[in-house]
Length: 179
Image 1 (cartoon, one colour):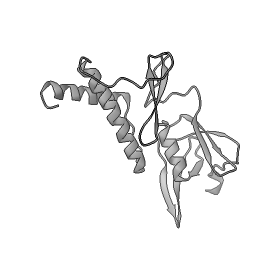
Image 2: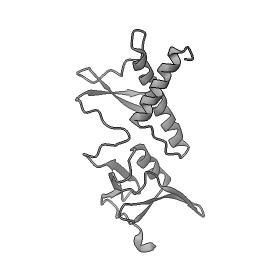
Image 3: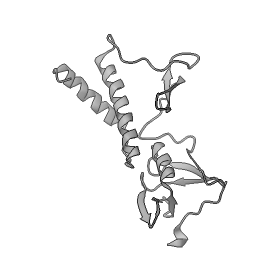
Image 4: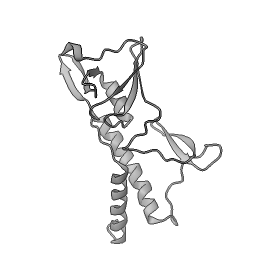
């Protein structure tokens, strides 16, 4: 099996395609990490922090990602340009983005209609359609659930269809007074 292992040469980026969305966790003595099978049937071994970065990209099986192992021991992981995620499709209109730094130090990037990209999105408010309020709430809830699951080592991702179904359920429940 040693011949089927992808070796990363320091500071040389490699574009790979995962055969499956998630890796398989392994423990060998004090060593812990994740094994990923690639579409070319090679196997790649990564430390837990690389697995977290891969999962944060929401990469589907077969989508190319660029991985560079730095000579310092750090890793750079990025989606290859021109390959939008099928799980979280990108909006195909031009919008500015604003960055909102939260109390936990995390930065969130939001699309907005300002020209200078300085304002976070408006929060749902009275007068906004109930569907829009439900969509905003479900998107926030799904993001929090994915973040929580990733912290527990679980790869949970919600698709656009999942978001739509959850929002529709919230609207129906609100209309029936089960809010």
